Length: 450
Image (tube, rainbow, N blue to C red; front, top):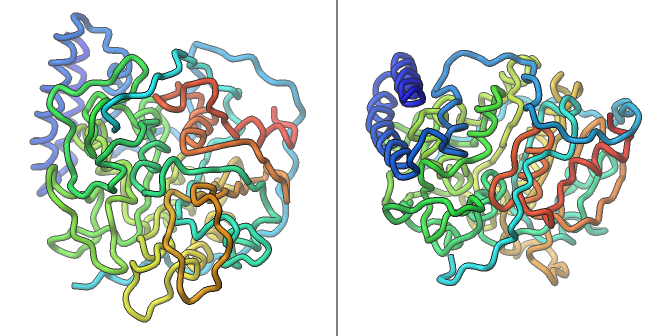
């Protein structure tokens, strides 16, 4: 089979660039992945493997930087909305505040709901408007504590007049793992992810995607055939990076890429340290087994270097602090700021560097979102929080309406659909139904769009 020859050639090329532990891991995992791919091909009875074909066509663990400019749009075309050119950038730019280096850490339900039978594949926007998307994911102290009249994140509150607030952005659950998984793959919560992966459990052997792209059953480590946003961006010959604060090899304590527990193992975390629960990309064998995770899933400190030039800034950047600096109360070292104060301090370091970068100024969107809820900080005044899943979000961009408000109902599936719209990618799983709203169109349309 020609496609099998291609994937084997990519594996050989990838192996030539990886040494030591990474080489051993890739060899072992690639054997698993190749076996799964062969099984899928034989079961389906042909070379047309649908979504898997896109996975096989992408570069595997490539060390060559793809072209900075996106490739031409796919053959399918969508009707282009009418409108004028975007407005110039709004004011309020702040200065950078130094390195992102964090202190080193110290020593589905049994009956599935009916799914909407729809297979939309056309994005809602023409290509070229937004080519750099940044997502910062935090823990919510409650909508009122974030966007109300007495906010507990003053730095974030100061950014609100610069951008568009999504006042009706809601989470799927209060746990972090199902929300981040949904935001990068469209997969719905299951019993294991809803418990924040007490073990890094594989799905049962033989688990496959259903016709709508969902994986049935319970698990934390998704099968090779289940695609993520990282796979889509790779296939489009664009670039993605996940930047994780405090990500280190648990054995050496040194910064490392694509860090996760072994399949079936339990993760041990320390106050102020890294947790793979905030790193959605390590949950996909499509990325881990085929090599894309290793070069693209990196410690946060690399962000500062990557932002220096448009050419080195990935098209999609997922930025996650430690649980402490995400704002989760009870996850910080004793005596350190926690909760909203820790999250606000993290934003004050990272956001200015993004805003002053050439990629953001040229065609960027920064989404400050929340992917979990946090217990209240007992040191702060209690504020009303009638709906913990209502967390809100803020969009910063030269395309956004300063001080704008968008009250459309959104959720993590909407975030995924929005990114897919910006990069003209097909919709994955939960992002596909027509009822899921993208905020790409409203964001661009408010200022005219193309």
